[in-house]
Image 1: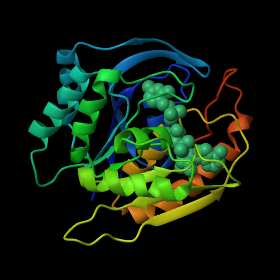
Image 2 (image 1 turned 45 degrees about the vertical axis):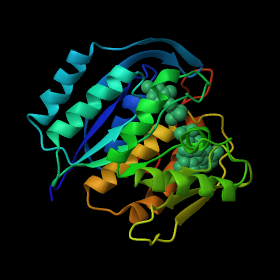
Image 3 (image 1 turned 90 degrees about the horizontal axis):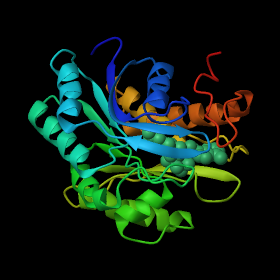
Length: 276
Ligand SMILES: Nc1ncnc2c1ncn2[C@@H]1O[C@H](COP(=O)(O)OP(=O)(O)O)[C@@H](O)[C@H]1O
Ligand SMILES: Cc1ncc(COP(=O)(O)O)c(N)n1
């Protein structure tokens, strides 16, 4: 195993540095990985919302992906915002032709659909294509509304409903699901790894619980968590080994978020709270 793993983010941008590719690169660094990125969309956004989205021509997206994979041995890939059907199809074709079987990088997919601000980051007509993409992933990290959409249900208000939806989605796509409790209420936030049934057996779910941090600065939490899991997977950690490490780090990053003075809306987290 490489001493410093190579992790690739395929995602959209946030020029204020809190979400998307910029958040991913900070997470990779926080977990001691070498970060790389391919841009799926330039997003004119800040802590208050999304203004405009500019998507590259698909041939140029493919050129970026090939430029990385032709040259670098990639240990893990994190996919975030895909945005449109042509972008999803291009990433799928690259993945399938570049990593047909055997020694594939670990793949974490954050099924990004809506930003914290409530703005759409995935075309409504691209939801089906994103769902079809998911079987390629090893781990997916939907938030409460994203999980509901994948499960074809109303957003869960309680933990048991959330876990039930996660089981259905895990089985439908044969993928491990991280169900995240950030959008539920209560004094604690629980994240749970739910495993798909294989050969009639389902491994027990694994949970990590933290106090709920009282801050409005939660921009990019989902991006950052999925990137952290990808980095640890590239370093040989199982999902269950990674969960408490990521949870503790995220709680510290949210706890220190108010020390940053970035923007007037939902500001970013402090990725390096445990380091600085
Ligand atoms: N207020 C909070 N206090 C502590 N942890 C939180 C809080 N909000 C979110 N998290 C954590 O941040 C991560 C992202 O959660 P969530 O908000 O559900 O997803 P998303 O950012 O994709 O909407 C999860 O690990 C969750 O436990
Ligand atoms: C390019 C991009 N990707 C993802 C998000 C979601 O961010 P969050 O993690 O706050 O839901 C975002 N705002 N911008």
